[in-house]
Length: 383
Image (tube, rainbow, N blue to C red; front, side):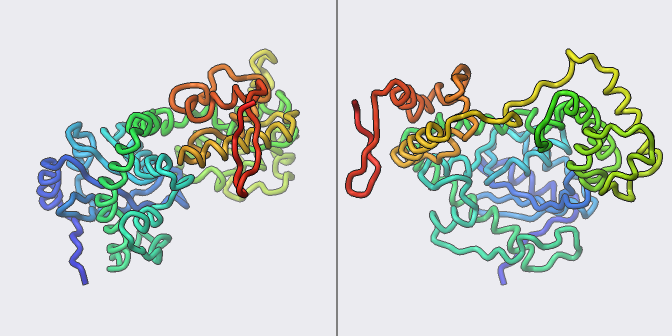
């Protein structure tokens, strides 16, 4: 069995971090659990250089300050794969985003590897190795951890540090370094991790919305968000989205009316129900001019399906031609906005996306290009 370096004391941690601070590049990953809490519980931090690595146990009551300082060291590039959740955890604990950072999943989308390529797919592609997923969904809160768990956690970074120079070379060879860097910039935006309680209602699915219902939903969702943060419990453990929507539609005026709504969980106390009634009343007192507008994604679409299919065909063609993942170039909402005549400020018509896709959208809409089939492949032709 390979020896695994697991750090559980302050002296060893400080010594390891001092060693890491002499490196130029480090691979970083975490293991966490968030099923029963609002904030994810950090269970492990894995760090690897080209020559050494370790698993750090935050649950061993050690001072993690040396790790936080390491993540903020501007001289060291921190490599993540699909790092958004890892970065969110670090941001919640420290208020800071690790810097500088690199995300191999984002880079892979510029290399013809498709949308959101998995870490396992990346390791197989570049190193020819197959990683077992046996411990992927194991209980990371349990102690002691098994050898299989530690082995799984450590190899998430031991292989990542080897993949990075290979994928980075591929990006350099295609002159797409600036493109990748601009996409990674999105991970450095604090608004991505700092949830605005006034805006959480926009994530809730609702059929046939009107502004009155959305106004009540906005205030109920804000109340739930603040309560869940305070109690450190998941949103749906307090009240599920669909129940919030039902309350917003029915606008009950007393506790018994709320209790009669199907799905109200036992965790909701009479005191909670009184607060819900207060929130409903507050929403009723809001001036109609201040009610939320119906977001685009909730509006019924009048978009021509054939036109949307044609843009999707062009997107697929441009994706195959460039080797860039479709999702990276544009999404369905972008395509709908084009057909809706709302091209202004769309990312499609700026920077590298314009070169890859946007300029061809303009040509298609002006009737200057068309498609044909040649040798069983879609071909673009000029008119």
